[in-house]
Image 1 (cartoon, rainbow, N blue to C red):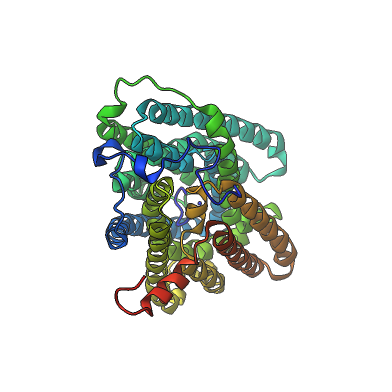
Image 2: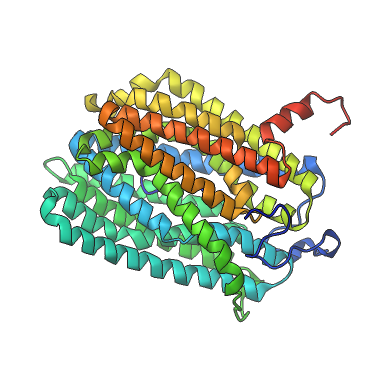
Length: 484
C-alpha cells in the first residue's frame, strides 16, 4: 500500500475450473528448465530449506521497505499534524481500496496460472494470461479513478477544500497503484522475487520520503495533505517505470516471439473470487480509518492510522513467507503432492510465527517512546497498536492460509470467508466506534482477524485434509527421529 506499512471453491482435489487440469505426478515435466521456476523437490527438507532461504531475502526487502515507510509516516505526521495527517490517511485509504480492487485479483491469479503453464511448457497461454491481466486491470483502474473523481466533484461542496482537492489529486494514483501491483506479480513469476519487491517496497517509499523532505525544505509553512498526496502520485509513477525496466530485463526467452493465446473461460471463474478477495482484503484493513473519516472524525482517523501502521509491522514476516509460499504450493498442488504441501505449510507457519514474535516483543517494549516521535497528538495511538498486535500475532501463528486457499483452487471459499470477515468488521466498527472511538475500531479489527483466521483453519482441515500448520510442526517435533 502506498506509503503505508500494510499491504491477501469447495473442491478438495484438482486445480478447480480456473486452471487447465492438473498434471498427474507421472506426467510432470521432466526438465527443471521447462517451467518458470524449477520443479519442486519431493524432499520435504529441501523444500523447507528453499522456503526458509528465499523467505529471508524477501523479509529483508520487506523490512527495508517497512523502515522507509515508517520513516516517511513519521516525517509526514510530524510535518502535517494530526488534522492534515487524518486527511492524508483518509484519502490514502480510499485510493488504496480502489487501486488494489482494480487489479481484479490478477496480481494473485498470475502467480497461480503462469507457473502452472510454464511447468507444462504452455508458453502461449502464459503470455496470454500476462497480457490479459494487464489490459483488464488497467481498464478497471482508469474507470475507477474517473468514477471516483466524478463522485468527489459532485460532493465537493460538502467537503473541506483540503479533503476534496486531496481526493481529486489522489485519484491519479489509482491506475499507478494497480500497474505496479500487477507488474510486481509478473516479476515474481519471471523469477525476480526480490526484484519485484524492491520497486514497491524500497523505491516507492524512498522516493516519497525524498519528495516530502524536499517539500519541508522549500516551503515556509507546513505541507498539507494536497502536497503530500501529489508527492505520492509522483513516487508511484516512478515505481511503475522501475517495474517496467526490471520486467524487460527478466523477460524469459520462451515468452519472446510467442503468440499469446487466451483461455478466458478458464480464467474468469477464478479471477472473479480473487477480485472479491483483493477488494475486501484491502477494505478490512482500511475499515477503521474509512468509518472514522466518514463520520467526520478525521483527526481520530489519523490517530488510528498511526497505531494501525505500527502494528502492521508484525505482518511483515507472514507476507514475506507468503511471497515464496504461494508459487511453491501451487506447483505442489499441480503435482498432487499432499505430504509435501503439509510440510511446506507447517514450515511456513513456523517461520511466520517466529518472525512475528521476534518483531512483536521489542515493539511492545518501546511502543510508547516510538509513538511519541510522531508528536504529542499521536500518543493515544499506543493503546490502539497494543490491541492490533494481539490479532496479528494470532494470524501469524496460523500462517499464510489465504495463499494456501487461492493457490489450490479454493478461491470461492476464501472469498466467502472474506465477505463474512469484512461484514463482521464493518458491523462491529459501526457499533463500537460511536462508543469507544478509535479504540473501538482497533477492538473490532482484532476480533475480525481472529474469527476470520479460525474459519480458514477449520475449512483447510476439512476440505484440504491439512492439519493447521503450527499444530503439525509441533506434533512433528515430538515424534522420534526418523518418523514423519
